[in-house]
Length: 255
Image (cartoon, rainbow, N blue to C red; front, side, top):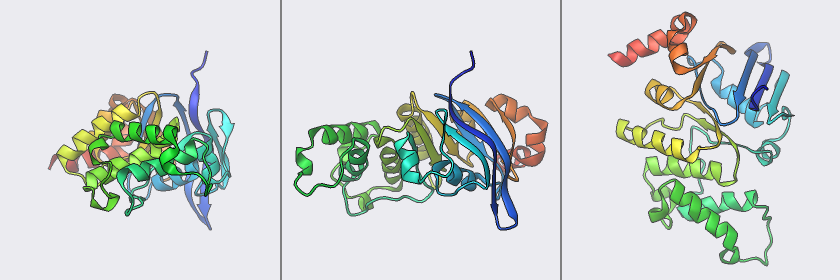
C-alpha cells in the first residue's frame, strides 16, 4: 500500500514572460514528513512556495494537497483546506499583544466571522486555543506584550504561532531562522520540532546546520528543477548535489 501524500507537485512549471523559473518540478511529500528545500540563489525556492500557497498560479502542472488539486485557488481557499505559510519578513499586528495576534489567527480557523454584537472576551474556546498556542511557542509569559516590543526571535516565534493557530496540517516556513544567532537558532529548531509534531513541514532554509538537524528529507532545487529528493545523508553524498550546490556551501561554512 502506497504511503499517504500530504503534498504532491506534478511537472509544475511557472514562467514570467519568456523566462521560465520553475521547470517541471515534481515532488511527493508524505504526511508527517519534515522536508527542507535548498538550492542556490535564484533557484526558484520562493516562487515554488508562492505557487504552493496560491500567491502565484502555475503556467502548467498540478499541485495536490491531501489528494485534492489546489493550483489556481486563492490563498485563503488553500488555507481553509489545511495549508498555512509563514514569510521571510514578519507580518504581525505590531500594536496588538502577542495574545491578540494569535487570537486573530484562531478566530478564522474556528469559524468565527465578523459580528459587531460579539465580545472577544466572551469567546471562551477561541481564547483558550490562543492561550494554548502561546504556551506551545513559549510566549505565554509575554502574552500581554505588544508585538512591536518583542525580541526578534520572539517575533519569529509569534509568526509561527500565527501560522499554526488555525490548525493547518501542512505548514510552510520560509527561512524561519534567518537573522538569528547560533544559540537562538538552536532553540528555534527545537521549537519547530515540538510544534510540528504530527504535521507535515516544508521549509526553505539556507543554514545547513538547521537543514541537516531538522529535515527528514531534503529537496534540492536548481534552476527550477528538483535534482534530488532523499534523506540528508543521501543528499549529502549525491555527486550532482555537490557539484550544483552543496559542496560550495559546506566549504564556505567551514571557513
